[in-house]
Image (cartoon, rainbow, N blue to C red; front, side):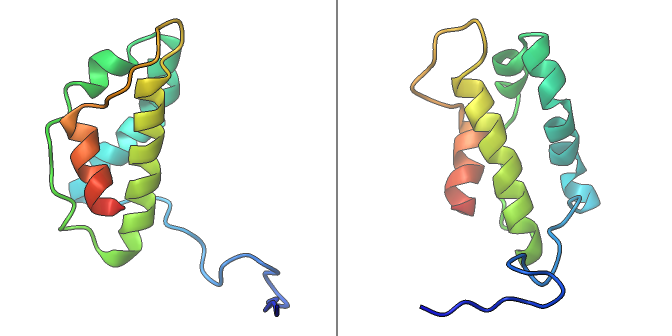
Length: 102
């Protein structure tokens, strides 16, 4: 097994990950930033149930990883909302984008 270690970045990718999505997807970035407050206020499922199913086909290739990360965090928070029993499903507004991005 061989490893390529960049002298400047070590094992990190050669390029830093995106810090935000395009304006069209800014709502997803905002929702990701609001997630800790939704968890704290116990409103995760209430708010995430409002997300309508949307196609992720318009995302540029470099945006896919960031969108997948945010949708994954949202789905996890939905299933494991504190002080609530876990659920065995997620709403279509999370499931469809996660399916497409995966």
